[in-house]
Length: 115
Image 1 (cartoon, rainbow, N blue to C red):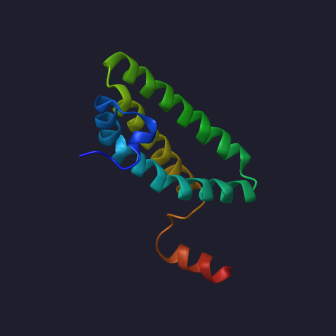
Image 2 (cartoon, rainbow, N blue to C red; image 1 turned 60 degrees about the horizontal axis):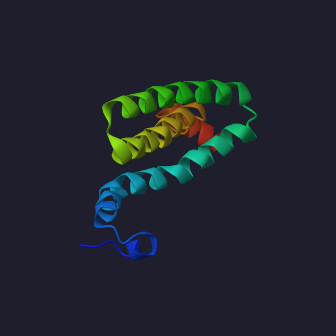
Image 3 (cartoon, rainbow, N blue to C red; image 1 turned 135 degrees about the horizontal axis):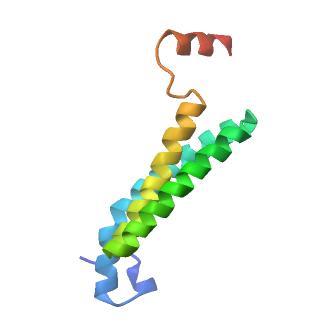
């Protein structure tokens, strides 16, 4: 089965198969991206720049380690896309917890009423 539009990029079936196998990673990355940048915007609006610096330092270190593993293990394109998924997921979690989006219970209800 050929993916729609792959003929615009390549006619090589090996490349098409690789693109098809990477598609779930692409979808996962793009699904999380919008929420991650929105939460990042919340932290920027709150001027929480120290936290953003610390979060990005930790994320950058984890990405560096992940890419080192991908390079050494030879996981190829799927390994690269799995790092992209980790990048979005780690940002989503860190920004979400820092911006109190994941606050649960009575404190969250009180915070919503205060707005």
